Image (cartoon, rainbow, N blue to C red; front, side, top):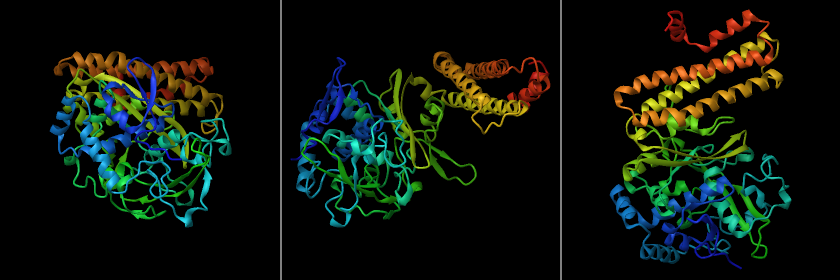
Length: 488
């Protein structure tokens, strides 16, 4: 039995009335203007399907520049003739959209007797299932009991190229290294979201050579180093060697699974859905990645920066559709030593005028939150020492410290979205500096609030007065201390 991804239902979509439906590629694209969004209970699969569809549409339409995308948005739906011509050309090239094609199974490696010994549980395909280094806290089933339907397996295949991380025995990571934070911009319906995720040819000099994975004629060679690639191949890069093993057409228990191609040219690939940081020391570039216990709103200043190194897709969307609100969804996984600790999906809606005008002020305000958070944490550590507890151990004081830090960031989060953003959106440019100063004062109050709460809860109020005062110096930098002494 086969499973044709063009026609078989495998992509879950949300309708305007709130109901869901699973559809194949053809129906999804032809009816995208009638759907709201792609939805999946597993974060990695949801973004993986978006990324796959972005690549497919870019390959089919080959938009030359932003004007081509503007024209497509004006049409309001995808052109059936263009899509059918694309699918026909793929078929003429020998491409199969069948998940179990015996020669070219879709998004997988072809048959190879030398690799047949690499058979394992299909659970390894999906990081939220317990297998290898992945813990049971994601999904309470053991590896050998996991089975996928063909639809689930297809969605998991889409996620592999975006969320694979390096591991033992030479398993490579994605073209971005360890999985970064990915950004998509939401339109008024699924059609608009997909168009806003398409990148034109002018974005890069190497657009589709080599082509997307399903049209690529090469062989997936485990551990083979690749120094450079095209934009479209990068979106579908085979960092894992996968071939699903069909059991009865209804469920999949096993697969051939091994190391894939090893992309080593991180500095050469510019992912349009990813934001970057550049080292002041040597100019090297690294993508922004999710971190344990750090919500992604704290990274918004860099992720959505249209003026510098934010995700290019945000800058493009802001230019294509100048609306009052910008809605973005962020996807990522938190990894540590080749293990997956968490899967993250966070959605934000913010005034688009902020992106066009005072985003540097937004960045500075968020940077101040990080600065004061570090200072508060340093003060807590010194208080722990004064109380005789090793901060490296998970004692009572450490637990209190974590709770107070979480409360600090929660206060800042509320103030950022409920107070700072609306105020800046309506303010004149001459008022930005004043608002920034008031924001800093607000954050400082939150710092002192949690510092005092820590002292109260740990019983230091009646003892350790000298230690309390000594540790307070960690809450102010030199400039703030001077202003405090002057009574400002």
